[in-house]
Amino acid sequence: MKQLKCFIAAMGLLALSQGAMAQDVLGSAYKSFVKKHKVSAVELKGSEANKRKFKYFINKYSFKISNYDFKDIETLLKAFEKEESKAYNTINITDGDHQGVSSITMQGNVSYVVGELYDNLTLVCISDPKDTTMRYAYALEWNTPKEGEEVSGRLISCYAKRPKGTRETRQEEMETISIPSIGRDFSSGRKIVIQPLNKAYSKVDAERIKESLKKGGISLNDISDIVMNGDVKYIVGKQTLSAKELTSASWLSEFTYLVTLVKKNANKTAAGIYVPSLYDLSKHTEKLDSSDKELAIEELVRVKELLKDNFLIGLIEKTIQNLKK
Image 1 (cartoon, rainbow, N blue to C red):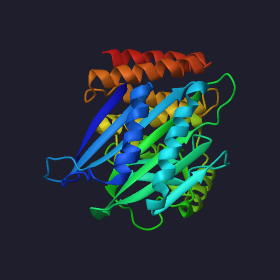
Image 2 (cartoon, rainbow, N blue to C red):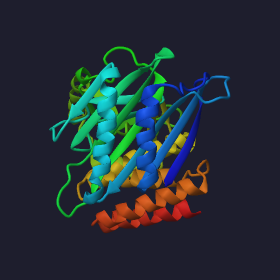
Image 3 (cartoon, rainbow, N blue to C red):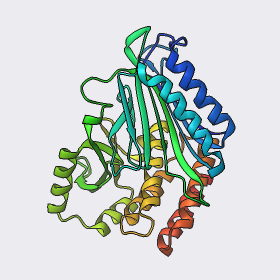
């Protein structure tokens, strides 16, 4: 099993509720699936400030399986059905036309939007019976099987504080946008590009942001040139950071979003923004371990195969070389 294991310090103590039924049923089903199939995994753990023991977690397992093995997804769905009666919130979407209906968040530090990348979604959120301020969230996303093609999807599991308000409910109606904007560095006076990669907003706010950016008349060439000069900032939580200021977890998160965006826009003009940003990240890999770099290189090789623009292909090759250093 491929894994990117990242540990975020700044969150919680208190032992995980090992006796919680959701963790027993769905946790076991997830483990069986991950053990059987080749997955790409991101596993994040967190603890509260000044505490050493990990309390929270959020895990993401992306997979591609054969049509024959679709029965294993059906087995997972049966596990979800068993737990639905205990859930305070459930979402089920089949072949829907949707764009980010919910987010799964660990303490506001790491968030995944579901209901956006795949055809189908099932999600349950269940309170921990030993501590009702905490909750388990499990999501399964997958594309509808097509003859002769592999079935892609992902599993997400999370244990963290139960979010307040409408978060993690169908009513949230979210949209993710990744439209860069141009700002100015106050200390140097230089123009910078601000990359809000795959950030979730309510649909009303997202439309407002997109409209304001259109009025600004931003040039894609201008953005690309600024990024190539290394003048780019990434929005991480409430911070705006350069690539060298990112933690390993944040670097991996931004990298994953960029790769997803390039794959979706491989032969569109937007790729001219996202590929230079991957190159920018590759110049600051000091905090990554060797396994993280190897997995990043594997993803970049896949990205390269999708591109047709020679300049962008060359830039991906330079990005790979930086990760090999």
